[in-house]
Image (cartoon, rainbow, N blue to C red; front, side):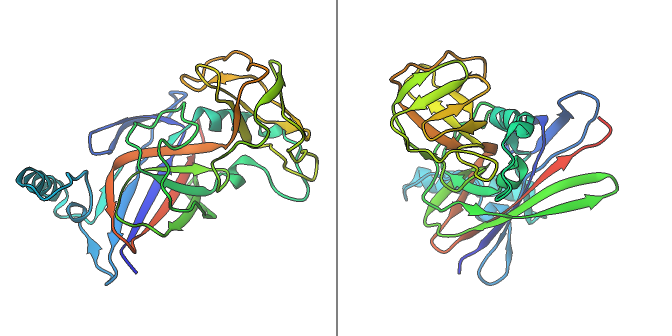
Length: 310
């Protein structure tokens, strides 16, 4: 077995300014009434149980064996060694909750409340996924930039409670890495990010979307159906999406349509536009590369702080 990465992610509904190394500074509550910090850490443990220093595994690397690549990589290691020579833990700053997560939270009351299986957002937002994309995380993200081939893993959820500070925690260990520069992580409501069932549309309104044939499982008081998914018009420019609050075997109901680019109000999809169904991406983080080799394992710990008094 290769080394194990342990990454506590502290995700909150806050505005965060980050330095170039991912450290969170000036973290403030969105409502401006409170102030608290949110950080993401990485710790590496190799197969012999040794805690590795950040300069041994972290940071973007140049490929190749030429003099420039060797010199560049030596400088990167030296830089991280200078910054973290006395530490084994590396700060990546906070996560970033998305517009989709905010909308889904606000609409949690509007779901069918199946008695057979929980569909509440914070119960389902428990799947950890990694990728290799380098585009900075944004509130408008609806999926990872470039998901890797490592399977998503459902975390173990728990409550971390102390002195009026309440945190929802989910811990997951992802396996199956090869030689890879892991640069992004996401927390979503399912293990499969997208499917194309029912494409294209046959009709759409400002609050509904009817798909081809009857490929969907209808939602009800006992069945989730497509609730806690978003339907994305992949033909529209820019793409638009809607949060599914209920569905029949052929049609989904959404509160409204939103532009993928900026989260503002979008136009109604065209009646023959292509679609895809996405899981809700609750939180997204992009960071400097964690350079893995075959046999490595990455363990993520995500903590969502629920602040009182705001």
